[in-house]
Image (cartoon, each protein chain N blue to C red):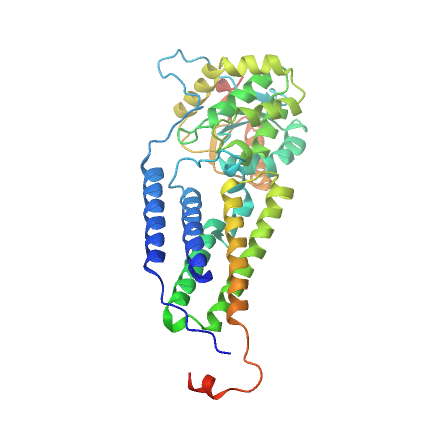
Length: 153
Length: 240
């Protein structure tokens, strides 16, 4: 599997976690399955809403976009496209920052941990690391003179 | 150097994605359709003898105005009122002798943790700390409202309020005041209460969260009517 395939796979897993939390937040589930921590305390806190939308719904959007970009990136046409790598790093970098802020809120403001939020944060971190590795792979600019073989390839 | 062209996506990759999507969908369908388990919900037996409605009272009951509040501990609007407005009402109306304050439980059926919260407060009343518990329960609504079992949070409040925990827990576990809670709710229904919070100020019914100024105006108006001998103590019989 290439890095982008791993990114798409992880993003799909994250998408289901986010959908699960979003369904709860939208009142479509009775209660959260939460064997570790206090998911409901976190989900009912004022910080579970961001710019008028539940954080989990933002998460669904994030994973959908990341999944779609990575899926495009695995197609042969775009396999070497550096723009895809940059987009993935930008997306997942933003995701890492947002997750770090949420984790800070859980630990030091809400004083409760939501296991699904932790799972999502780990996934986002994994996505970011893979995206950076992918960018390094696709990011090497051509240096020096072109050889005729290279030009003809 | 030119890197070799990457291979097109392997079939195995799409199979993995398909497997994850399948498992995820099945899991979501399962959690959406499974029956909810009201594991720790305290339910009130509809056939149990209904006790006598009995408010929790603050202030001088001979004051010219009686403010009755029918509230649900799990209702967000009730919590807003309790946290933001009620301190002013106590200090500037009740403590000034302008009105007495009568709190009645009105647990709504859709709030599964409301009755346990009412019970926790009622058990604190046994030790003379009703209002401490009332304030703490409302202030911490987010901590217990959707908990599978709210007892842990409620017991924490009892500890913070300095209650004798053994006695409080015995009262809570045996549901000692469920009859009173049920009776308070029944009184509300007889008086036409349909939502929370509902205030009845010398007979005048006001629904929804109220700001201090609005309540104060209603109390002043009721006091003026009472002072003018126009009556207005129509609800006095309900309060104790």
